[in-house]
Image 1 (cartoon, rainbow, N blue to C red):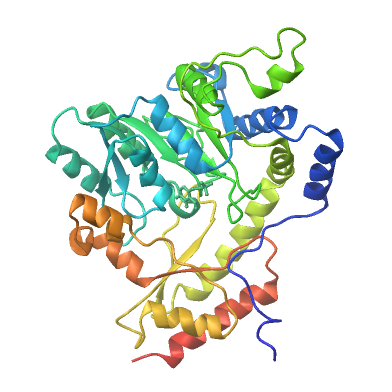
Image 2: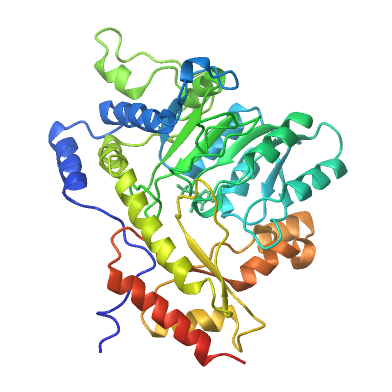
Length: 412
Ligand SMILES: Cc1ncc(COP(=O)(O)O)c(C=O)c1O
């Protein structure tokens, strides 16, 4: 058998005729940068996020309509959201250590500092108890915002995060890069029918190549705060007061614009937005396919002493399948396990290497690897298995067989 022919990649995007037609439509329109397609993507994305509301008109917690702003990456979106919240040098932003570097780097872009928070024991999400303990130790008034991360498609405990944020007057910027679509469980601070990414001051989704819907690179900000939306809309386009589309399509004074602040170049081109609209229209189809794979993995690995299946719960979009190997049952560590998987043609990944172990943050904040024991524990055992919508049943079964057989081979 040629293993390369049989290779199962960690991820493969679900791209078809709809996406191809969308890209061709834009190329033929000759309007390639941000324009109508992006406006439609923003409206359609907002409508999808709001589709869970049963009675939007009577919603007392979130009376303002949801605005969506498309950007060229989730990283840009997180940067814009913190900037609009007024985060500046001297401020502190609480970020889980168990996340991708984007969540923390944007804090540093603004000259503010990151305060890491440990994960739940045996989990991947921010631990509300650690969050509050950490806040108690900070100088009063310095903490400006918290950035909960809805890891792997599973929403974090937003009720706990929002009530702590209220107590300490923190802005809440949700990193929902992994979590579209992930409905939140209704609760006093969240309210009914709210999606992950729509419960805080702003939430940011990623359309990176491996995400649940993709434009190759791209992202979307959601907010119900019109002042934040206005600031982010200006800052995503150089701090200019008028959109590029308006400048070139308005009949009068198309050349005139004013720079209100030194902004950023964070707009997404229509070529990508059109692909995003095609992907958005297939959200439910792709979700159903991932849910079916996750169910099969859960059944296969649940009773196996060599592995621990990922925590799941209501609203889990099953973006990742982060299985944990049980070091007490296995003779080999996570890294060697991954090597064996790769030798057998299974592509995997690791989410995440905790940020407090990274040289930059270690040095800047004088951190030790053991400062966040729960995150370190998860990291040392985790392997993300392939879970992408186009996987065939045979491919899913082969992943299961290879993983389980390795478990048997390397039992103590
Ligand atoms: C948790 C998390 N936040 C933010 C990002 C950044 O997303 P983007 O690549 O769209 O900037 C990622 C990317 O993988 C991520 O995993």
